[in-house]
Length: 317
Length: 317
Image 1: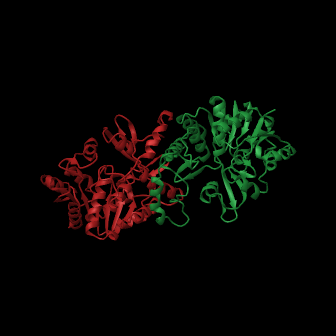
Image 2 (image 1 turned 90 degrees about the horizontal axis):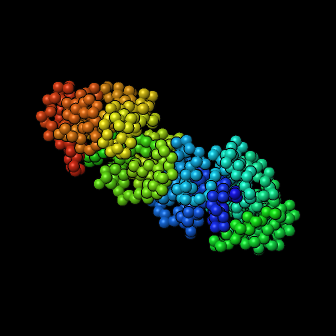
Image 3 (image 1 turned 90 degrees about the vertical axis):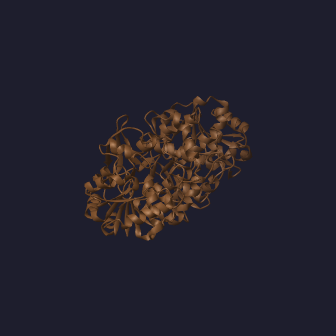
């Protein structure tokens, strides 16, 4: 059994590759919920949904999020209320993309949570509805919310940072609200403890993997398995393939280098997979106490994703 | 100023007539919220919305509820989750019609309530967004939920009775959960106390006007103004024009007659407007201690609605 620590897009692509090279029922995805949010009364789990929609081949390929063949009538209708919304209210905000068919997922999740189901239970139901095959576990059933302290807007939610401001504002610090008291489900800890390998998907180490690591029981469990943990770097040639990982690394006092990634992951991962273009940085990974493995990490097609998956499975000494 | 006690469709048509014969800013609609519900995390106020959409000329004319030019993609997408929903859960229920553009109203209302706004405040914002002109007040900002005890399904919510079972099941009793502790907003009591006339719209006396009367402060305020209160009967020739009023009257120990309506309203209304076809029942209304006024009450077009509105304004002695 393979456990995979996941953020959104990069993790989804990695999982798609992994599903091509091993049976789905031997894969456990442990997914970040730090960027979950509540909007218009609905409970939204962006990373869980991105993985679900990607693996179901239902994701919009151009946007990289949400469902294909989507319509936006609800969101457009919400604009009617913009001019009557009191100052300070976000009730008629439309910056977060809620497509009409995507809404059904949030409506189902919200309804089930209100009925008393755990996010773990609801996530399993949604995964079954989309016939994913693999096991998908939220990192916690409790509320953990990534808060982003910005220079220009003060502390804002992750989605305000990521979507509303298109991760284009300078970040001073991150905080994972609720992480200190959030419990890690036993299924998550069991997966970490018993997995043959643990892979950290090519996700943002600070805002996607960071929330998982902010759960001390999860961080401890990972440290205990350090020699079986393989991380895949989300940085290629000094740049993030998607999202603000490169910029955030610099803003928060690291570097957009493989050495910086290795230092971040060194406590929990003995191996780091980096891209060919960064071959010259392999020695700096070693210097951080992490074994470098060099291969193609840019999952531009399914073949490369499967190749990366295969290598990640064999990368542990 | 005219205060109108309102349920859904019949009240909406009456208000449309009233708006044709007097200035909007002198009309206060006090609306039933007993059939409000929470579904998929969203706060839904069917009577408020039916009035809003009708007066904005946005209601679907064929269905009589919801918005015209509506689409149903969210609800259709929700069906994906039906087969993974655990027994006893209603998370993937699609019997309540939630159109894509209608969803925006519920999303806005839910978001504002979560921000701490009262239903009165949100309702005023929604009315302004649709440029209704009149003042629309929910009967209370607290939760009152009409519960319907049925022979076949036990006690169910009003919407389960009305929509899911299409008011086709036998009813044993009604209960207005929360009515004993719900507060009547001061704006509602002030409107009742200061109105030149108070009209009870042609709504179901048991399930539409019943919840308003279950609020003791509202019932007392109405009794104090009894001589200025004019009720319009929703029964014509022994039948309800729409909905289950006739059937409910019989099932709950009344009759589908003007005498029964008069007896129900006698404590709060000195005058009852009945349709021409029930001229022969006028004496039975008088016998109940209520003055009958006979006119056309079937608002099949705007002209008749305006005529009915005019007569209701002059019907008090």
